[in-house]
Amino acid sequence: MSHPTHDLAESPVPPALETLRLTLADGIATVTLNRPDKANAMNGPMWQEIRTAMVWVDATPQARVAIIEGVGKHFTSGIDLSLMMGLQAQIKDECDGRMREKLRRLILDLQDTLSSIERCRKPVLAAIHGACVGGGIDLIACTDMRYASADASFSIKEIDIGMVADVGTLQRLPKLLGGQGMVRELAYTGRRVDAAEAREIGLVNRVFGDREALRAGVREVAASIAAKSPLSIRGTKEMLNYARDHSVADGLNHVATWNAAMLMSGDLMAAMMASMARQVPQFKD
Image (cartoon, rainbow, N blue to C red; front, side, top):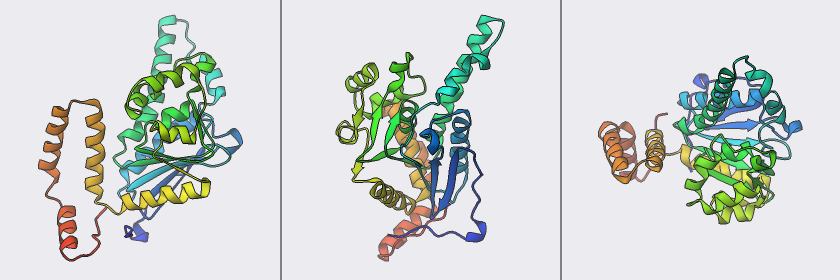
């Protein structure tokens, strides 16, 4: 398999983050949830840093694809309850209307954090081990593909703390799972789904035997993507996201406009020439 080549002297340095590790190698950016002592609970800084990381991946040409994974025993236990407990002080206001507006703006900002995964022009793959709970489901629902180790489990836990899931699960999962029946069951009951069932209902693409196999397998998929035409990959992601939320006619019109602008690219010529020469094409970032 061909891998993209980069001038190391020009390789960008990822930003240093408090709750995440962000690395870049061979065209693959790895975003690692890094609060293992807290089961990678998503506290205030992590929510903001997820967006920082995805903006960086989007803006960095050398990053052709991204993987989101976690360290420690679990992928993530979801939103940090300390963040929930601190909401009252954060939105405090003498005016009830203004207090409610502050809460709405905070929820919208949390939604935008995870939507940054969809906005990123590069494909984002989730590698999930251990528990993926609550806000973790919101997160992985934004990724392009999801892969799990055999020990992974999933649950929409918001119902068990007396709230409505509000940062994407209820909006995205019905389209991922092909209907509302299973999503409603999981959202109403909060029950745990193991890796095998997650594969059966279409929540994950593939299940690997253990965490090491998961890591290697997801990197193999990412490397395959990184070897493709970056411009075509970016366009394909945009078309798929657009088609999900629009009619077939709208999607066809949108892709016609995209290809009218971007089809005649250096990537097209490189792919055609390599095919005729029976060689592996090399693409510009």
